[in-house]
Length: 212
Image (cartoon, rainbow, N blue to C red; front, side, top):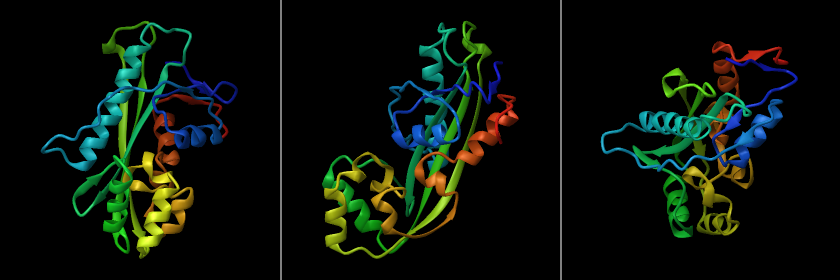
């Protein structure tokens, strides 16, 4: 497997999330973005953690397959999926403003859980699918949202920020003012637990000469 070095930290990022791209760039990587088209539908008996892990693996495998013959591109693919879990229900991206408002009303003043699963896939350029390696992990964080008035909710949703985010808020932007406290990885809540992501790639032997 190719090593990622301090002078060429190239990976394929199987995500269209600008937040994940920014986090990887801050770590010194130079990701090449290639989105997957995996349908995000939870199985009837699938636990939230199993669901996010499956999606992370499937997204990585789909991009690895799409780029199977591209020897000119990085071999490592990073994929991820984030969900919010509230009272046993999985809250994903809202379908519209009314859906976003309803999610925020439910969570206001209460605790919810954020689960982010990530997966490193070695796509073995030019090799059969059987040569691929995948390592996936799910990271959890508990989040307490402050009490919200109807005006708070309507104004926040009107900003447009909740519409592409699981649970209808983004802790790294305006939504940070809605969060009272968290226990666990802040970056898990953002959408990519960077400590674990780097730690896993290092354990897979994919880093060499990386600053950390």
